[in-house]
Image (cartoon, rainbow, N blue to C red):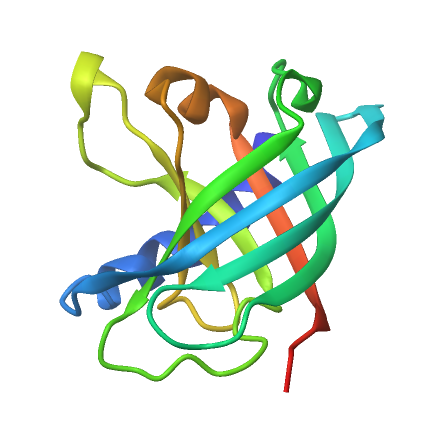
Length: 163
C-alpha cells in the first residue's frame, strides 16, 4: 500500500524543486479548529477530521474563512492531540494575494531544513498552485512536526471573503 502513497507524493516533490529558485515569503496565518470527532480507518491507517479555518493575510487584505478536512495517512498519531492547528502561509512575495487562493488541496512533504533538536518540520504544498505552502507554527516544534503525521492532506474550500 506504500506504492500508491509514493505515487501521490512524487509529483509534489519534483514540483517543489522546480519552484525552489523563487523565494517564498510569509503571506499570512491560517488558523484551523478541528471538529470534535473524526473518522478512523485501518487500511491504510488514517484519520480524517473536519475543520473550520480563518486566514489572516499579512499587510492589507480581507480575512477569509474556509471549511475543509485534514487527513493523516500512515500515522499512529491521532489528530485529537490538538484542537487548533496554526500554519504560516508561505507564497510568492511578488504576487498579489487573490481571494480564495487557499481553496485547494495541500499535501505534506519534508521541508528539508533542520531546526533545533534535529527535527525536520513538515510542510504542506498546494496541488493547484504549488507556490503556496503551509508550515506549522507551534511553541513546541516537535509537537508541530508530529501533529501532521506521515502523509497529511488538507483540503480547503472557501466559505466567505469580505467585500
